[in-house]
Amino acid sequence: MAAGLIRALRERVSDIQVLGIAGPAMQAAGCHVWEPFDRLAVMGFPEIVRRYRELSALRRRTIEYFRRLRPHVFIGVDTPEFNLGVEVGQLLFIACILPLAALGRRAARRWPRGAGQAPAYAIGSVAVWWTLERVVACL
Image (cartoon, rainbow, N blue to C red; front, side):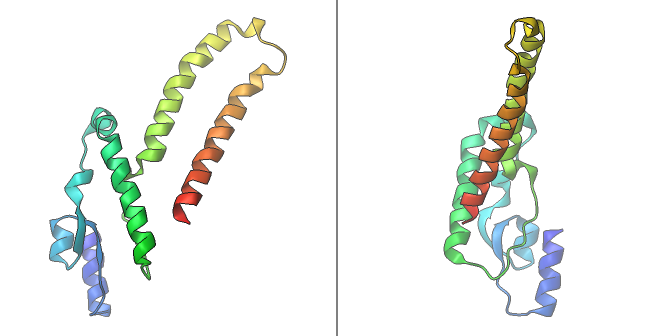
């Protein structure tokens, strides 16, 4: 998909410079490989968790690289593995909340009035934190 886009752009703008995290097809289409795409290749959730630090560092380096480079246009071809800050965080949050919700149902009679709203506030707080983190990363 991305290699086809590069070829189509080159037909219209011959002196275009394309660079990014790319595989062989994008490289053959004329993309300068900043990082090889296979660094993002993962199979299954356990590998994502095992390589989280490496993938997160690659994401941070990419953001910093584009801050310095200041490209005219950025076209992101989505890979779910590269958005680990959201996906892994959401999965871990859900994995923590589900057992707490089950415990909460058992102890619901003992909770103070209004404590049932605490999970909603917790979810909202985490969502605001994730949003602010992404906004600051883009500045």
